[in-house]
Length: 177
Image 1: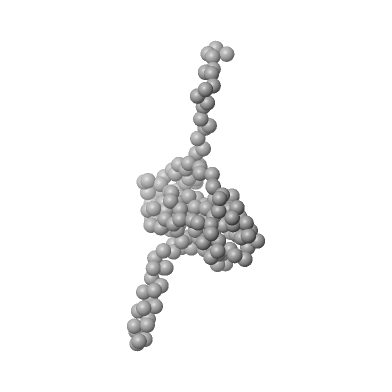
Image 2: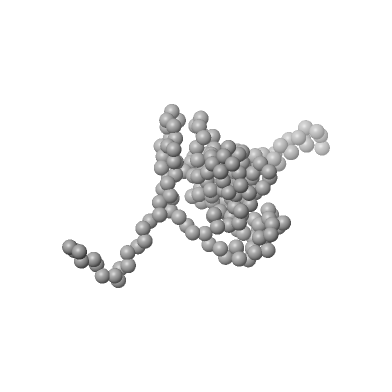
């Protein structure tokens, strides 16, 4: 094999990995978790402006699988991740699809085996394999129309929690009381 062929093969082998990873930074202080929910164990904490590499996000772009500057791998809420897009920093939450960040899935067993076998809570993975995160509806403001000349709103994402459903068997309140 010639040196030129070797270099071409090496470049071709690295190219898919380069296409998947997305360079970003934290918009605020973040807690990196062992899964895509704040209930999973803490892996690391980072301050605002910390460079991170986004590997992909779950469907809906609420949580992203990232690699921190110290090499730790984990999940960060996408509202706290900024990515350069159209000459400004935008939150991945609401812009993930436009940016082109891939959608990935999460399974405790293989993910934890690859990244956390040395952690104390790794022994509790059977408990975490049945853990079901609380799904919260998210309304993302300003994510459809992008105006590069206008600044982003101070809060780019708003979490909307629906009110509890009324009990259909409860008597209706009487008027005038």
